[in-house]
Image (cartoon, rainbow, N blue to C red; front, side, top):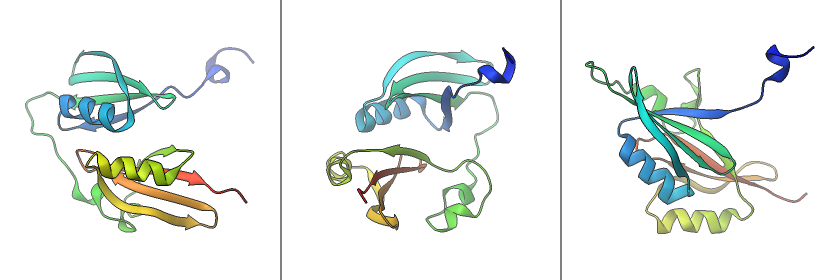
Length: 142
């Protein structure tokens, strides 16, 4: 089969933020993402950032209604798993200890440090400037 879904590939991850300027600065400073484009959309503003091998689409609401923040979506672990839906941006690094130290140097909010989630899987979880969870893990050699 050619065309259609046979040609599908992953393109990007999109997140909604309270301030596009703050988000572009934060993701640039913390993860080294670089803004590639920014512009208006019907509902607000979009910025595309590249880094870590992916494109991050950052969206900011721009209509009259006040944006909402359902607190259940920002619950601390393990309760972050209660609401169904998208949850966490996930990255992998070669040296989790070094990455965790860099988060500390950059003043990032850390949820847990170098926690073993399952045998051989350690991660550090952080929150971005809006409180979204980001998990950074390192796979241990077996």
